[in-house]
Structures are given as structure tokens and as C-alpha cells.
Image 1 (cartoon, rainbow, N blue to C red):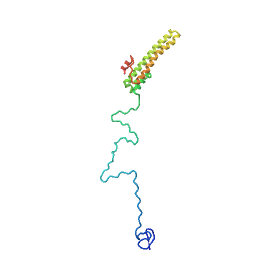
Image 2 (image 1 turned 90 degrees about the horizontal axis):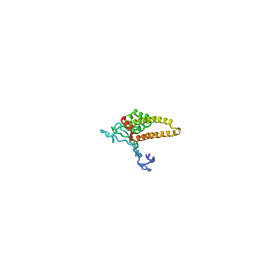
Image 3 (image 1 turned 45 degrees about the vertical axis):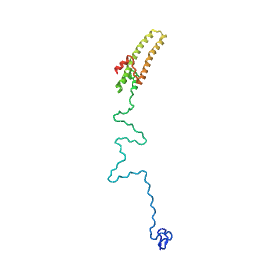
Image 4 (image 1 turned 120 degrees about the vertical axis):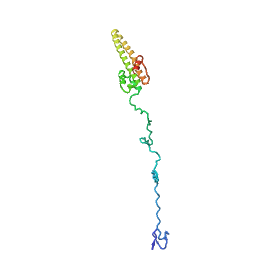
Length: 203
């Protein structure tokens, strides 16, 4: 007695009466599973023997900047150009205006500090500020002496007139001081009479 190798039934003859499988034949093989899909990233195939590998793009030179996607390009500086300004120090117009801020003090200060003392424009404003302040001190001393004399001569009822005259003399100097700072900040060279030419010679 023989049995079918496919379904295991008892067989009388050369074929199975149930499934028709020949007696002595090998059972059918199961179908091979399909190959897995290729990955999303696949490395390039190696070059054939005897051929050197050549990349599609040349590598960047040493020290080159690598820009990642989505980032803005860096500042490009051509050879021979001076470096960009770092924002340190004062601009010429700001330093020229500050020369008049405290008269003698700021004028002398900008004549000593570097690199402002090497700038001809700043030196002119510094000297003009010093000479203007010296002139104001001299006028103030003369007016103080004259007002003291007038206080001794004039009656008490006219002392208010002396105070008014003092402000009449002081106010033009204050206006002139403010205008000099404004003009210097606007990069305008305002040369005062008498002391302006002297300041230009010293600068």
C-alpha cells in the first residue's frame, strides 16, 4: 500500500484518486516570497575594476564656507577690502559736536584722545570750542566787574535792570553754543569771526 505524498490518502495505482498526484513525484514547492523593495537611499554602485571613482561635484576648497539649506549666505569680503566697521568709537560729526559740549574740557579732551586728535575737522572744532569758551570767560569777568560797579552807583530800584542786561549778554552766547553743536553734527563747518580763522590755523 502506498500513500499520496501530496494529500496523504491511500493510493492504489500510479495516480492518487483524490488529487491526481503521480505516485513517487515530489510535492510542489511553495512560491518564493517577493524580494523586498529597495531602500529610499541607495549608495552608488562601486566602479568597475580598473576604473577610478569620480564624484559628480568637486569638493569645496579648504576654508570654504558651507551654507546649509535655508540659511542666508554669509558676508563676502573681496581681497584687499578693509574690514567692515565694528561700530566702536564716535563718528566724525558726533565727535565734532561733542567738542562744544563742555567748552574747554571737551575741547582739550578731543585734542588729546586718539584717533580724534589726528582728524583735522575735529581739531578745528576743538580749538574753536576752546577759544569760544575762553572768550566767554573773559567777557563774563569784565561784565561781573562792570555790574558790581553799577550796583554801587545805581539805586536799588534799578538793580533788576542790571540782571536783565546780564541775560541779554548771556543769551546770545547760549544760542551760539547750541548752534555750533547742531552745525557740527550736520557736518557743516561754521567758522566764527576772529576766533574761527585762528582755530583753522591751529588745526
